[in-house]
Amino acid sequence: MLHSGVPATPGPRVIVSIILPVHNAEQWLDECLQSVLQQDFEGTMELSIFNDASKDKSMTIIEKWKVKLEGSGILVVIGGHDSPSPRGVGYSKNQAIAQSSGSYLCFLDSDDVMMPQRVRLQHEAAVQHPTSIIGCQVRRDPPNSTERYTRWINQLASNQLLTQVFTSHGPTVIMPTWFCSRAWFSHVGPFDEGGQGVPEDLLFFYENLRKGGGIFRVDHSLLLYRYHLHAATHSVLETTIWTHRVHFLEEQALPRWASFTIWNAGKQGRRLYRSLTAASQHKVVAFCDVDENKIRKGFYCYEDTQATGALSS
Image (cartoon, rainbow, N blue to C red; front, side, top):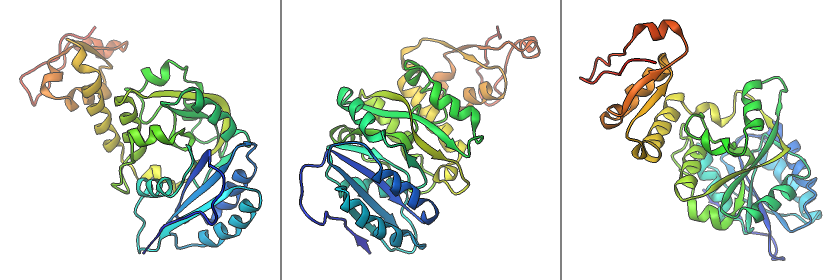
């Protein structure tokens, strides 16, 4: 059964809605909701929670915090369903957005913790960049987990947020840090509701770019970003992400090029070549590498077609 969330009482116009999908998050919810309470944003805030068939004590914790949050002037809207199985992150986010009313949307995962200035600083950025996805820097928990990935998240230059779209394994500003206007979300979205195994964040990110949207990162660490084995991101296969990446590359970049070189004469370069359509394969003039052993081979023959790669350089 689906339970639609509605605000308990009418109030002033909501500026920011915090969008919080929840599924069996009892071990993290107290810290997460405490961080909502501690926001220093002075405008009107609303917390929109959608419970995606949690079977643990998540709802008990949410009801406890609803009293505290509303006592501090933060409106709380709760929706959800009690079906035997969850319907997925994309569905839950869409439902939380639909039941909310804020002019801006701040996305929050139930296992993460916001720094007190997050809503304020990202709202300021969103006002200045109304057709952009706004991200921020993060602090990882545990601190030593995914060190290279965390550096990449935090240190990309502003121009690299766009130039690395085609080489990264996901959005160049990560989903748990997203903030945008409701108007822009409505123009780009909603999220794909395919459920487990669907990279709904990457698909939305690509659609944002297709529709001329920007990417902006607030260069402050505004989120404690948890790493654990139960995170939804682990349900998305690398091969699924690869397929979407190659499709986006062929759609957005390759039509403008008469020819191009693949930088990598190893497994990844050959994999990219094999993943391309025949029309795109014919545009490849060379594989480029610095490995002398690979260069010494001289050419690459793709056995399943009559086309061959040109000499490496």
